[in-house]
Length: 549
Image (cartoon, rainbow, N blue to C red; front, side):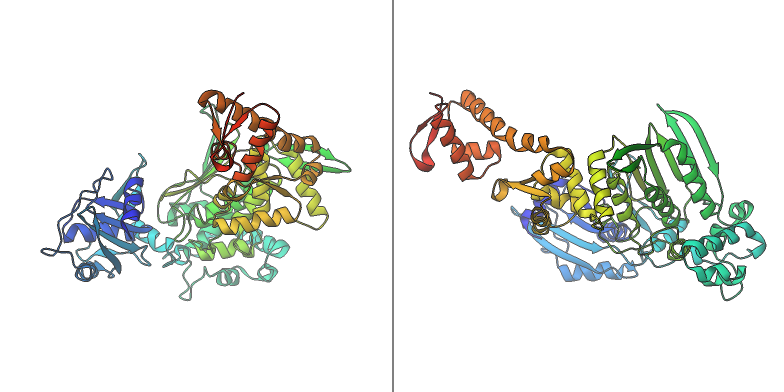
């Protein structure tokens, strides 16, 4: 870390992964780092005030701070020992200590037995809170250290399971999943799924998948689902149940049915249906909520419809390594691997573990908006689907590509959807949307240009991409291309003339910034306006200025 990076972190303020302190003793330092390590990891900056002001901190070891000595102290006072990186910085003569720690691969405490974790509180502020015993189990599950679904349930027997649920699972597996499971006995099926343990005990997953309601209440009381419908904040339906997972999923999917009308239209000889929520979207999102929730803590799987917006929430934040930023690119990391495997073998969810990618693709393919995970926290995963008006033309284009055996990739669909809504896209915006680097985004965009889907405008940093004439024609909107290309020159001329009237003159660099053009494009535009008599050029070449006659 250098002074510029330090200033950048201080300006952004405290977050889930960054904590500021003026100064701390050894005990305070270890507690703060345990707190960060039991969450997403991060940085502790000593010598920075809560408001981000860099104030400096007294040296920790006499006249200086010894990074190796501080790292050793932290390792000695944490269990298991935390490995940290310590940097001593000078910021305008102020002594700063920056300590970085990764997210721990096990639950960590101080050697005095203090367990803490960093969270975002109800006011949106980062805070350190105690890590309760059941939360320690949840943390272990989140980082893959334990699978709660295979923990033994003393006292549970096959009498606590519903024969109809077991039979239903076998039917699903035979029809659309691992058909070997369809011919197994109840006990052999439980063994194959990993929920009948060697000692003869049943695991948590057996009751979650196949248990009677009374067994779920007794052995896994944290499991509960809710279906709610609200209109203008008035609750019209509020159904709360404790049923096995597959039954819960089918019930919740069926409950959404009456609120999921399908918009139909004819595209030539083909009828195209555009539901608010695609079947794949509902199946994968509800399954994810059930499979990846934290069963060590109380809380409902909640499916809520409020003014046509679908919201699905589940207790427990994203599993370790998964964030909103890498949701579509990170390797799968299920919180409860055996449950996830059972859903895949039943044929209910995507077997590759890329179900979220399918959710995004399915919504965009029917002309709707992509899912929104923006309300998720360290304790809850929340996804919202805003149906909005369907983009019929884009949906018809995607359907036609499918029929021709040329399916559109998710990244292409994301970019086309963005350009349809915004008119054009920059390399930076494409990188932000696809969660990739700018150079990677440029390659993707240029590939779409090569395929005739996009065209470019401008050069260098001013370059933008918009739909091509061929693409507008495929969408049945050839006139829109003329508007996209033709209105720009008129708008640019109007902007330049307005600028001149307000500022008396304009230069090439002014015009380039104003109209998002390259220097050469701005020069050509200004010379044309001068030739038409709308402006008068004073000076030569790069020093030229343009005024009204």
